[in-house]
Length: 150
Image (tube, rainbow, N blue to C red):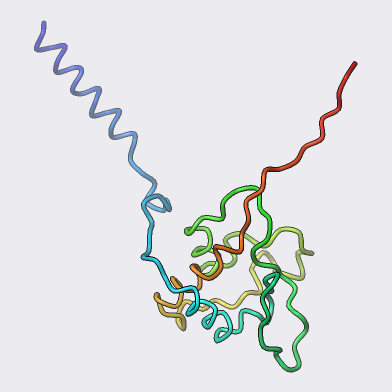
C-alpha cells in the first residue's frame, strides 16, 4: 500500500512538473550585461533614432530636410519599462506600436514605420542603447478620481 501511494505521488508530481514547462518565447531569464549609456547616446545619434524619436531634456543634431521627431521616448509611465521590453521594441518594433499617436503616423497595416536595425546594429550597440534609454522612464503612481457617494 505504501509503495503504491509513493508511486502514485511520484507520477502525480511528474505530471504537475511537466505542466509547468516555460514558454519557449518567454522573456523570463533574459538578461544582457550592463552597457555604457554614453556609448548608447552615440548609437542613438549614429543610427539616427532622433529622426523620429525625441527625449525630453536631450538635444540631438538636427537632420536636414526631416520633420521634427514625433514619438517621445522616456517620460512618465505607470509601470517599469523593463530591459526586455526596450530590447524587444528595438529589435522587433512591430511587436507593440506606440500608444497615443495616430495609427497612420507610426504604422502602416499594423507594421511599424521604424526601421529594423537587426542586421546593422551590434549586440554591444543594442546593450548600450538600452542603458541610455532606460533611465529616461519615470515610474509614477496612476492618479484616479473616485466619486464619493453620500
